[in-house]
Length: 164
Image (cartoon, rainbow, N blue to C red; front, side):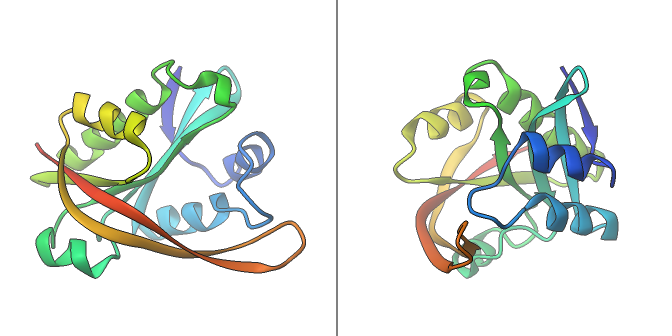
């Protein structure tokens, strides 16, 4: 497996091989932020196929509860791998470690990520990687389903932090 920064031509492969829920692709907007310098969009590859991705948001988490406590803390977000059969095969760990390397390169003192409160398996992974629970918050967003209907969501999350 190799990890690289996303290129424009990778977005089509990501959409094809790592579908997003609903009909709205998240890969295009993530690449646009990456291209503008607001984030670093990382892709995990096995051969010529993308098997995972994540994004480092350099401005940090949007949630006001988190910003109040961790003002200058970049956030790793959108961590995922596909297909699901690749879970527990170190794709997520490799992406997090690559993201942490980018954060260290920028001489940031910490990095954070959010985890849904009903996802103890992922929270345990983050704890094993050195993250500690810090701040509860609501992760709010909107997505469009396959029929074109927009849905608002609010997930109860915990922001976890690792000091580098």
